[in-house]
Length: 292
Ligand SMILES: Cc1cc2nc3c(=O)[nH]c(=O)nc-3n(C[C@H](O)[C@H](O)[C@H](O)COP(=O)(O)OP(=O)(O)OC[C@H]3O[C@@H](n4cnc5c(N)ncnc54)[C@H](O)[C@@H]3O)c2cc1C
Image (cartoon, rainbow, N blue to C red; front, side):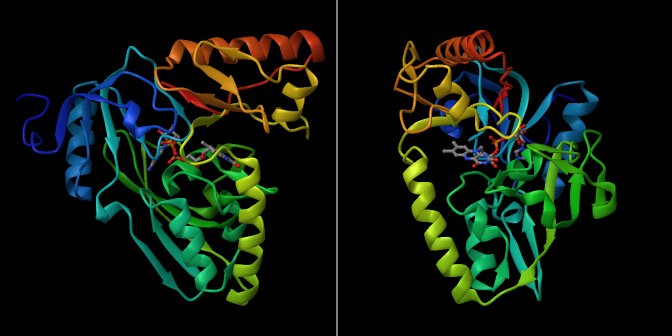
């Protein structure tokens, strides 16, 4: 039986990954699949795992740097409607792993459920956000999780309950291959109050973040209570660039790439920033972005 047997209709070979990332950089995936339902997803994962092929998940690609040489094995994208669901039941929201974070935020606000409005304007999917425990304004997505449905590398579907989960700064114990869906329990608050709070936060975030048309990445984790961007600025690195990638002037923790930039450009700038911050401030910056 061939590796793709039975899944030829959903798997593409040598698929360029750059269009699936915010940096728009990187080579191809040896195999790339957009399964249409959970059955297809599970079968595919089992088939590739049994053949000892690497399998990875990609969300909106806003926290990924893909090497120009590409990646071996299978990359799965949960774009089909079955993975992008959202359902509200009183103060509980159940959200599919492929659902946009922005959809979750808007739904919670509309339903008068507090907390997610703090994440307004952040790019990404629920799966990516839970994998990284996305946070903003000291609020992290993991704090509202009641349970999560996941698929293991062996293709087994399990439920992770709140008491078996741990979330810390940009880290989560949801380390299984696929986060299929998650249930969040939220506090009630009038939708008008949440809408106002969200609008204010949105204005602030828009002024701090690179505009959505820019090829950008949020590069380093904050350190010891200090924002990575402030450390980079204190090290005198504003304006630094490597090839076609430069630091964003308003927040140098964002790397911004021009068309034609390479993964080498990003890695070279990353190294320069790390080295200079270490030499000048004796601090070690750790990448927030995942490198494939
Ligand atoms: C402009 C900008 C601003 C940002 N601001 C912030 C911020 O304020 N706070 C913050 O925390 N982050 C921030 N980020 C980083 C990023 O947006 C978040 O971490 C986001 O939640 C990642 O989601 P994604 O879908 O893009 O994940 P991806 O980049 O696609 O993937 C990230 C990781 O999650 C895994 N993954 C994705 N989907 C699944 C799934 N369904 N199941 C299992 N694993 C999965 C991937 O395998 C990968 O390891 C910012 C990024 C940008 C570009």
